[in-house]
Image (cartoon, rainbow, N blue to C red; front, side):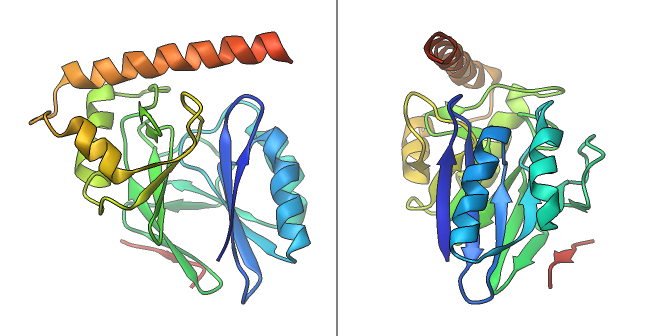
Length: 226
């Protein structure tokens, strides 16, 4: 498998996965300033873009990004509950996306947004804003921090310690973590309550605000692709 983590100036993160055998690939959570970087990676390796996978309700400038990607013919994938009308394929919890000989599993992890999902490939969890490398991300439109906390504990922390968490945004200069770190950090939280969730949410919001300041100052299951 070919893999690339792409970073933007505003600390957003996107991911490119490609099957070197069949020459098919996907991009997870592309942004306008990352699209060119991702397309270059695919072109250099002669990988055809099959899908664009969204982990959450897209940002207002997503159409600008998709305008750059549409000429390459990808289908846009998101959870069935998303309000975004530019989706080609709407999936449910535990559905699968196939590209080449690879399979990505869809995990519905609501809370950060009602339509938030995590994509599982091999030992890697692409969590979007649901879980950053240092804790839960901030809630978006229609979000619920308690539900987000529940999704993290019941869905994501159930994976083995060594599974890697690849978030949709850098947090405190970190771009990747492992399940063991979160299990250890949350181990003394015996139940899902608003208190610990708000604690981590407040910390993340503070970090995010600081990052933005620095940036501004500096310059029925469906088998898809089967």
